Image 1 (cartoon, one colour):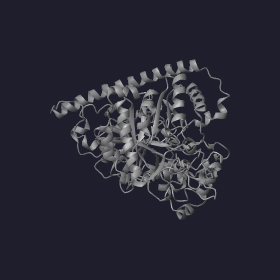
Image 2 (spheres, rainbow over the protein chains, first blue to last red; image 1 turned 135 degrees about the vertical axis):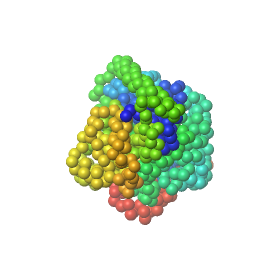
Image 3 (cartoon, helix red, strand yellow; image 1 turned 30 degrees about the vertical axis):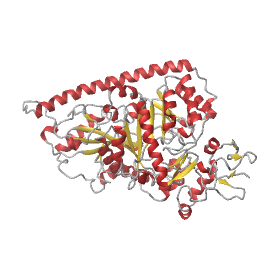
Image 4 (cartoon, rainbow over the protein chains, first blue to last red; image 1 turned 90 degrees about the vertical axis):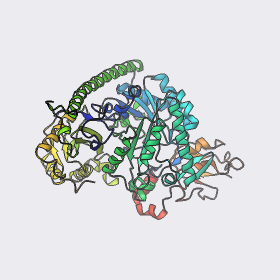
Length: 523
Length: 96
C-alpha cells in the first residue's frame, strides 16, 4: 500500500472517499498550504517546515532583555541552562557581541539560514539594541534571513522600521481578541509612560497587536501568529483568533501548549493552572486548521537557541570561546550558498517525487469514485470508509526515515493514519524539560530509567503504535501493557510508507474494527 | 530625593531605557541609580518610570527602603503561595 501523506488541512475523518484537491501528496507540514510565492520565501526557514528543520539551522541572539508587558506564563527571573523553552536565556549579548556570535555560528554551521531575535524580553521594547543588531548583520552577512518575535504592543510604532531592515518574518504572540480573556493572561502593560493593569491593559495590547498585524501584511512582511493554549482561559476562543488573524493576512498560525510548572515560578505555574494534554492541543489545531495553515512542529525554543530545531549548540558559541575562532567570513558565506542550494535542490526533488505519487493515487481515487470498477488498485478509502484513524508515533533523527532507537528518542513525531493516508499532527517531547533541582547538576544523567520510560509512555498517550529502529525488551513489554504496540520492523524505511503498511496490517488483522487497546489510557 | 535598586533586580535593562534622566547605570551585581540624577520623575511623569516598567517586585525602593512595587503587586501571586512553593523558588530568586 502506497498512500499519499495528507496535509494538515482537514482531519482525516472529514476527507471521506478521496482527497481534497491540492491537499494530497504534500509535505507533512504547513508549508504545503502556502501560496507558491510565500512557500518560496520560507522553504529554507527551519521553523516553518517539519522537513526543512532537519536541514536548515537557525539561531536566536539574546539582545532584548527588557519587556513592556507581563504574561502569566512568564517569569522574568528565570534562567536555567538545562531548559529549552521561550524566555529562557543564559547569556545576554550586546549588539556587537551578537554579531560576533552570529558570524561565528554561520561560519561553523553552513546550514544556518535564519537569525531571530526573540527575547528574553520583547524585542520591540529594546528597539535600539535590536535594530542595531539587524543593521550590522545585514551589512556583514546579507544572505542570512532576519526574523523577530514580539508581543505586538510596540508593533505599530516600529512597523516601518521593520520593513526598512528587510526583516521578512515577524511572529506576533496573540492569545486573545477579547480583553476580558486578556485580563486573565496579562496582569499589566507599560504604555505611554504608565503601568496599566487588567482589562484596560489587555484592550490596548489587543488593539496594538491587530493594528500591527495589518500594518505588517500591508507592507508585504510575512506574519506568523503564535498563540499559547491555556485550558479554561482561551481554549474556546482560539478558533476565533485563528479566523481573524488569517483574514488579516497572517500566513501561519502556531498554537502552542502552555508550559506551566510551579518550579518555573510563573503565575500560572504557582497557581496550578494546568497545561493542555497532547490530545487537547491536537483537537484545537484540527479545529483551527479549517480556517488556516497550522504549524505543528514548533519546538518552543529558548531565546538563545543555536543550531537545528530540537538541538541547541548555544554552549559551543559562548562569548569566551569566540575569540579562539579564526574565521574567513567571505568563504563562509560562499560555502553557505553552496550548502543551501544543494539542500533546496534535494528538497525540491523530493517534493516533486511526492507530487507525482500523489497525482497517481488521486487519479485512482477519482476513477473509483466515478464508478470505474476495473481500476486495479483500490485505495482503502474507497472500499472501507468506516475505518477509524489511528495515532502512531515515530522515532526519527530526520530524513523522513524510521532511524532512531526507542531509548534514544527525546521526542516522537505523531501521525494520524487513516484510510486516506498519513497526516503529520505534531511531536511529543519526552524529557526535554528540566526536571527541577532533583535532576539538575550531578544527577542530570542519572534519572532512573523507570521514570524516563514512564514519562515517555505518558507522552505517547493516545498513540496505538510506536515505530522505531530498535527497542529493548523491557520498554517493549511496558509499552504493550500500556496499550501501545512497539514496532521495529520498519527500520530505515520511509516514515509514511511504513505507517501506511502498519495501518494495512492492522486492518488485515481486524484491529481497526476493535476499539483501541489504549482507549482507557488515552488522554 | 532618589530611588534605588535592590538585589532583587534581574538586570533586564527596562528601567535604563525609560529613565528620563539617564540616572540608571550598569553596576555589579545589579543596576544602580545615580542619586544625583534621579528626580523620582517628579514634575515629568505621574509615576517614576523605572518603577512603572520594572517587572520585579521589591526591586525599586524609595529613600525609606519601601518598595514601589510591593510583594504580590505585579504578578498577582499571593505571598503565601510563594512561600508554599518554597525553597526551590527562593534559590532562583537569589540566583537571579
